[in-house]
Amino acid sequence: MEVRGVEIDIQIQINEVNSYPHDDEINTLRYQRHMNESRWETSIDRFSRVDPLIENFCTVLEKNLPSGDWHSHLFPRFGAVPVSYVVTFYINGFPFILQKEDCRFKLMGKIMTKKDALITIAKTAMYAGTSKKDGSSVYLFFNKYMETPNLIKRAMEERIEYYFNHVTYVKKSVGLDLDTLEDIYETRPYHKREKVLLNVQKISNKRYALEISDNVWGEMSEKDMLAFIKIYNGERKNRRSKWWNISPKYLWKYTMGNYPSESQLNTMIQFLLHNRRDKIVVDKSLELVRSLEKFDNIRVRRHGSQLKVIVKGKEAYWFIFGEIKNENEGNLQDVSTVMITHLQNPENNENYWRAKKINDNFYSKYGGVDVCIDNLMGGSSIGDQVYARAMLCLNDSESRKIINTIDNKLSSKTALMIEDFESYENVWEEE
Image 1 (cartoon, rainbow, N blue to C red):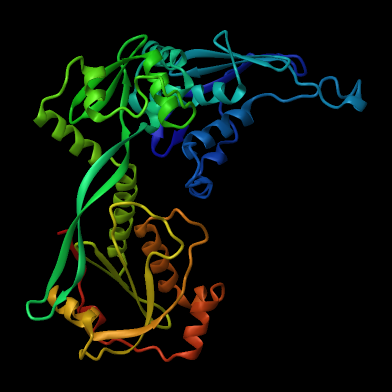
Image 2 (image 1 turned 30 degrees about the vertical axis):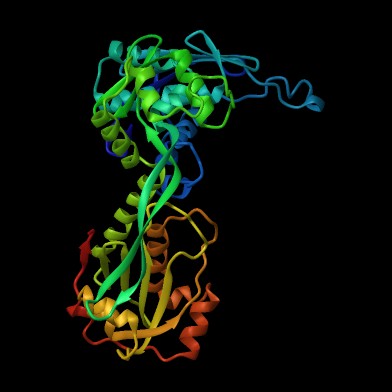
């Protein structure tokens, strides 16, 4: 079978089923329609910790498992009784045996839930397909995966959360000097608890490596790794543990065996800040916004922290803008949406001078009316909000049917048609 362009050699054989005749024939997986692209896209939940690809792969595996109610025809009053069976999955020719005895599941003789068993089979099959390994190598991966505790498995796939206190200095704009067109800043100290994500790898049977700095891996035992994960994912508040609220300096010492030098500590902190959870979310959302450049009717403009998108809709021109922040606040309305209705008057217009400074002619030339568009839920990053509103404005003739504020503005205001839209180019200046 093929999964997202990766050919996976997986077959299935039902050896024993107490409600069906024995079937010794090896067959390819059925019900593969659950692996289509549209199902992946629609099954993605931004708050879910489950990989949609693995989740749908497990759906395919479960659909191929036998189901029966061999007692139901004898005792209909009590309903169906689960069947017992033995199913063999052949991955790159190597057999992996899943047993069910009444309500108990065993994978290669180890008792576990059906969900965990199917996830293990799916992960093994994906590894086999992407690495093109032979059956023995696939089994070694399977055995290593089985021996790893579930908490650490999740950490290896999603990275470990870690937080520490950090003091930084923030420049905040307090106005604009109209003589020099320069912003006036004040520098203030800012104390913040930074949440970061760290990579983890298994290096031996009971030893793990944690990436604490750039290409620097500290070692932990399995016991310490579990304690570390439980403390920082909020599962256990063990204040007596040496990992409780540990600073980067002592994290280095306990995993590397000695204290870091000043340069090593500074490099470590910069590495940790680069892997902030908020920063990763914001960076990914900005990549999404930049992908809007492929649309002929959209112009993307970034000048430092200022993010602006110009959209040519079916019925009006739209201007969407917001400020990129270092943290993902995720409020219901972090960006503004304007329907273009008139030309700007530069007199006493601070936005005009700011636009002049960064040579953004559109921002200084056109104005309009604000349109209130809220997110359905909190937690969306600045880039996600800009992208969503750009799609709504691009299809404004359809969006007005479901969003009253868009319909009200299109009905009550006269949109200004912009003749020089094609002359504006995409601009992406990060500094």
